Amino acid sequence: MDKIAIISDIHGNITALNAVLEDIKNRKINKIFCLGDCITKCTHPDLVIDKVRQVCDVILLGNCDYAICKPSSKGKNFWTRNRIGEERAEFMSSLPISYEFYMSGHLIRLFHASPYSLDEIYNPMFSNKDTKYHHLEIKNPERLFENTPFIGKTEIDPKPDIIGYGHIHTPYCVRFKNKTLFNAGSVGIPVEMHNTNIDDINNKFSTLASYIILEWYLGDTKLDSISFNLVRIPYNIKKEIEDLENSDIPNKDIIIKTLKSAISNNI
Image (tube, rainbow, N blue to C red; front, side, top):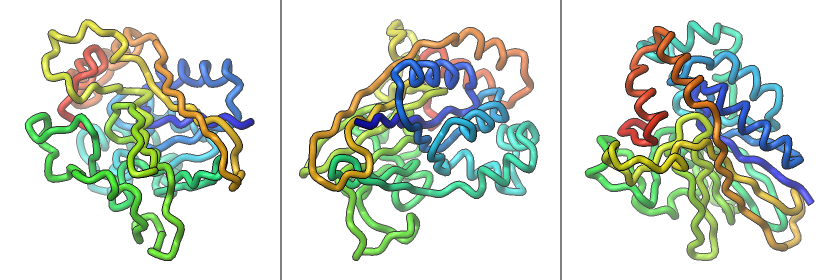
């Protein structure tokens, strides 16, 4: 029996990443797949890149990872690019967009946001009044199961039974039309999309790092059962906030607020 840890959206939070990796080690999980956005926002993107290169079997490209590859990167992206250096930036720019595999007869496809772009947003708890990103909103979840040139697929390729993605920072798992859709949430900056009032957040569970465990037989095309487990991990948020306060990273006040509250208007 195999166990795969699906992690995503670390966003330079090395403290949270180390806590999650310790939990993965304690559970004796075989493999780790990362769904992108390793960097930006928090203060240690260099350490995060080095760590995921060391421990992850698969690392996919996220929208924030892509943003640092632009020569015109400004603000927090420019800060991050200076921090990681050219070799790490080149590595990030070379990451694949999607990855798929069989587990217990189920074809599982992973990507950061959607099979059409790195920026589209699908969240079952999403509403136009909650965000300024409504123009990127996916209304029909079946769109996530489509074969597209963006991920190197054509209509003759098999379509997935299970989709796993990141980007929205909110973990969940749903079943519909004989298919399964899950989101790994965020290791580094968890967000509860339905929360709009920072005073309502006394639930510390919302700020815990998250990841998904897939369990059964990797590579097996014979149909069998498969297990999904959502894991929430506490970590030293105060340490990460102190690092932000002592840094010159742009928009650090917004990031600190999100770490404390799990509320954000910024994906």
